[in-house]
Image (cartoon, rainbow, N blue to C red; front, side):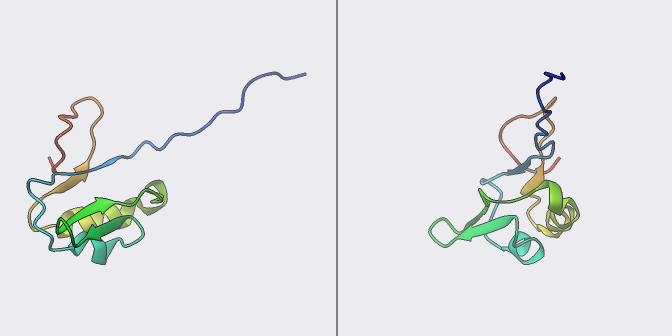
Length: 87
């Protein structure tokens, strides 16, 4: 009998938003509404808690490229400065 634990696949892609750069243009929301939300209170974007990032990698790439402030990027776990922002 095989008693190995099932492998649980974790998301390998993480998004970061540099809130010091985000000026609320909401282009990320236009390009990937399934991943990004927007709050009128702070006038900034955020990653939805329910976002399936792995299923929307291409849309996030488009959103990253569309951000005029370069406020969105992928987290590089080896070099993460925890501040956000595209590198």
